[in-house]
Image 1 (cartoon, rainbow, N blue to C red):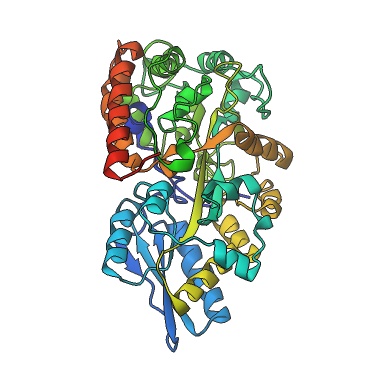
Image 2 (image 1 turned 90 degrees about the vertical axis):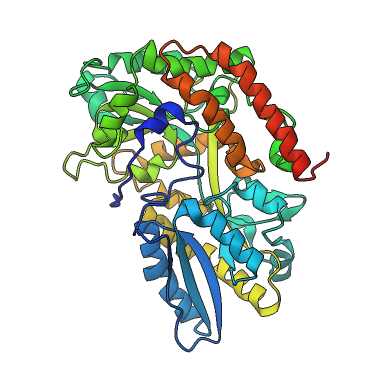
Length: 475
């Protein structure tokens, strides 16, 4: 099943940024959409009460919200108007925190749409503990995949219900593989023959006319996911063991042979191996509708938003092609966690009282009800968080068999950990420091990771210690 969407990968970020987006991209565009930074759907007439649902701007999601969710809610709850507050994603965090501080009505939203993510919002006391409501109503949380639900459980509490979850993967252009007579990569995350070297060899075979940007075909692009993405593929998770539970860290490990090797190999794909487009070529590809979407990149490692972002790129449309999905490769034999997971939850604003809390809770239950979770999956092509619905989702990709989709998709969760931008307090600040240090490195043909990582590790560690002090956190 193919859905109509469009996404433009900003080329420069492939080279100089650690992260394409701070969370899974809004189908089809994160913060793109209709132009106005803030739009609110008019509440239903005759309703006694109103709840405010803050969402991100994106034509596919917004269509689902206004044409599917709103009418269904109005029919089920005619006495409670649904006010949909539509905000461009980069502006969501500022808007919601201002609303909460001012005591303006805001009931339901997602922590990972803009801002520093779940860990910061939880620590700042912006979201409600759902545990008492779950226990009171005996709400069945077993519909959720347990490992996914657990991402937003801490301190013995449940802070949100996940509605979207995906790993990071290697997407590849089947047509370019077919033209070269090369077999497709495995879908098995346990396959130890799928190594970095094996993937790089395919990239070299599939690169053509590298020095001619007008006709070049590029074999391999790695879109680094956060600080941890490159390091994990090569066997090292850089955050302390308890960081994802507490939201704080007193260090981050960057200056080790494993991490240095990982970042050097990413750099060398452009400047040494010459299988990845340089900055100028990336900018040119972006003008063709996106790097992978252009049809001129054979292998493109990316966050799992590729599942829905690339959906319109199919043989049924002009210029489309079949694409497949493979695991992240083994950078080293001990890379047991080599995928970054991205999961978005629905949460309730902390401090609501009485009927306002009851209405917000009712709406969250409504959103995650099977029929509404299914309609979101079908409208956006995003992977659901409920086991029953995932079995349906596996059949939505016309160029891969459902069992192959299931194997490669689920394997990321066996070999993955949730994204740091969701679970580290004030992640945006940390990420900016990393980007500032690494931008020039990835653009420099002579860049040497061993020269960059010692200072970067120290700068990040100093910032983490300062953040903990400023937030009043102590172990």
